[in-house]
Length: 191
Length: 167
Image (cartoon, rainbow over all chains, first blue to last red; front, side, top):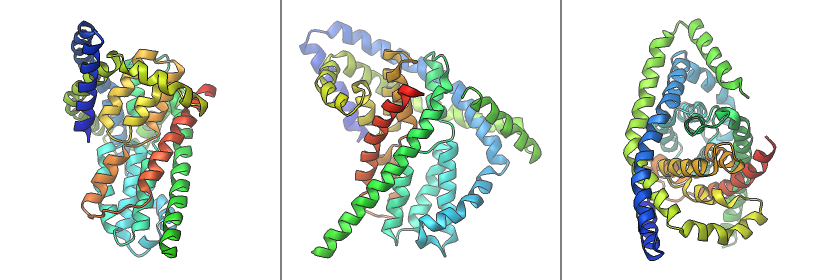
């Protein structure tokens, strides 16, 4: 999909600028953007690496296991089909914890495993993905890195609003999903 | 809010110390992963930042934004953040490039930039997540997930616009 997005942006962008006589400007933009991209990415390394390092200490201290244990009763309630499936529960809590701490790629393997373990129950798989889509994160480190790199006065000032909006979007996602799925079920029953 | 990061780091180090973790070694190992994540991202960011820049400076973006402005403003949304809302569910690196574009063009402390940052932090690349997580289990039908995720995206965009005005 990203292939199409990229081609679309490039083709439309260049074509429109040629038609509207901004060729020279677009030439500058291409060179400038390529250079900016490198400075920007390198600039992100500092904060992102710092954060990954701090989280690694937490990981090595056993935080993922600790949080997992705390989350387990909640998981049983939200995903009743996993009641007698400790493997699924482990995968779910590891995934949620990893996402919460912003481990990024660390969340993917447990996510795949959680879905594979729950595949008999489509409702639980769907709910799991819906919860995942809200992206609840303790510290949005990449965004902070971007703000720091581009010279914000206080790069961390978006933490509180991000928490609030994350919770809103989680509630909204689950509520909309509940409405959608009950609507689908009703339709199936009437058929 | 300024205290969150330093306090968090302090707590982490104390916890690490209490649990006998070789803190600095762990830190270096983690930081290494962070560095290689970003370095691996550089090529795609070059491609995407150029594409976003070309698209914006071609002039078509102004047309799209001026056309959608009246509609979006009615529901309380900033039309500058529209590109981020569209690209966010599709790709993480593309939304990173878009976010950079918004933040640098409108100034990092502007309301638009902060709204975009909050949106970025409170949503997920749901297309990617769905595709990768369900591949092994071979589940094809996921009724309602996409609708819910995309609708939640719009809601988070609107609430980010509102909340950033106050905090």
